[in-house]
Image (cartoon, rainbow, N blue to C red; front, side, top):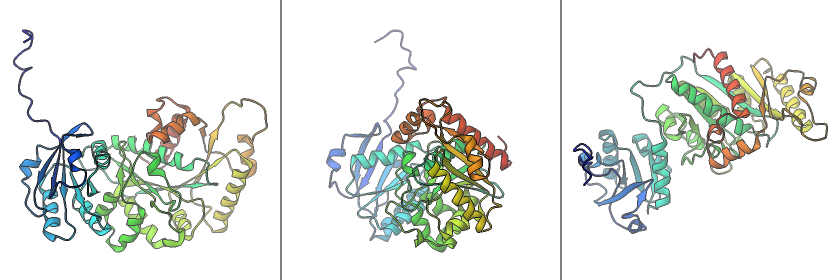
Length: 401
């Protein structure tokens, strides 16, 4: 015994909160989970029938509870709904081959995630990691703007880094909004090659496809259940995991999603596909701001010019559009005669509104790790450029910061 220790130091600390699994049988890899830890939390198991009531006082001592649900048992589903309603413990539902309708129902009921049975440690850790990364609920509900704002990203061509700019900018904007008790959302409508969620280190089980399929059942609660929440506070609706034809959705479906999102979150960022569709033109007409991303190359500027011409031909030239030149090299190192900023106005007939510095080592590392660029380098040139764009958007929208 150390005589310098006080009685306060040796007060009992109680049982360590952990992950409690409420399952009907110990099958699959459950034996490997016993005594293991998930995200640093100890795992314990209680075997009980899928419809037997679970004492919420018992769950209260857990950091996370995983509750088995039987898709063919209404009593089992009702049990989970009541537990989610009565308990403050984060709940994960676990079920065999969960149909999409059941996943939606459980998420709407309050499940933080739905995992397939048998459970694996990797999936359990991934799910718990997302729960622990979620910002804690504020006592004051997030303020909503009277009229939400829609910001669209269009790219002069694929591969110029428009999605990286969209995801990183939306992250920074949302983090600033969160300090004022407001929210922002990023919706990836690049239905074939969208990877905004991936670039932010998110692995949501649901996507924009689920919002399309919801049809008239789409509401704010369903929208929030589909959106993954990034630690910065940004709500992210991912692109479909499988390639989806661009004409598989209609303008009415897309507009319904966007209108709901702007009412629910306030400021909504949308990453559009490189190819034009009727619904993307409908969104252009609805947008409060368009950010056209290009780079200093002849091919990129040629396609940017053609896109500006298309907007003019469709009588959409009046929509507020700003031009972002990505991968701007501030100081030319080496020979060659690349296109310069001064050439852009001549090529496009308009000025450059913003530039984003070319820092591939910073951006590539952020994408590989799925984190905001500030976690790679706190004071980067690209970060400063994105702050300028974020502040300009806030000023244009009359947002107090």
